[in-house]
Image (cartoon, rainbow, N blue to C red; front, side, top):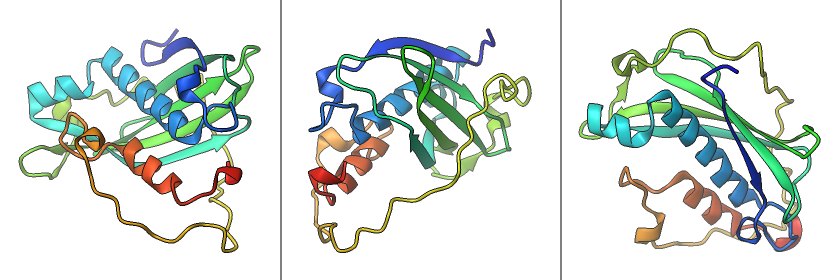
Length: 193
């Protein structure tokens, strides 16, 4: 197996389900974040390492998730994450959640950049010695048609204000990406999911 591919067997616990007793949208985002974090950690480029060595942190610029089927509570799953490439200042980490029989349940891609913690300027991945070749694109490729959240037809609640609390802040002293997603999900009724 390619050393850039991280894989883990897991079970959908009750803490990772929503009101439908299936893997929730926000919880899926947590699994994607854990996947890219563990993958980068196995490669030697996790957030703690680049903070200590380069005074930098990873920033998620864009996240895409495609749900084929949300797994049920207590269902066995396999999580696979791998980097798709190095385009100078960004990389894409692909994560796929597979069912018991190896069928693709959820596919996600997150575009990551590195910023310097003092200047908040983008850093080239070459400064971290991040790989430039050898990516597992041919072994595992995640592709799907672009689609957006369907129009709400007046069903989404209006905007609201939210105070940011310490639970929203991650180790880079920024609001965690999943916290943003959870706040946005508050705009949708339970039936939407």
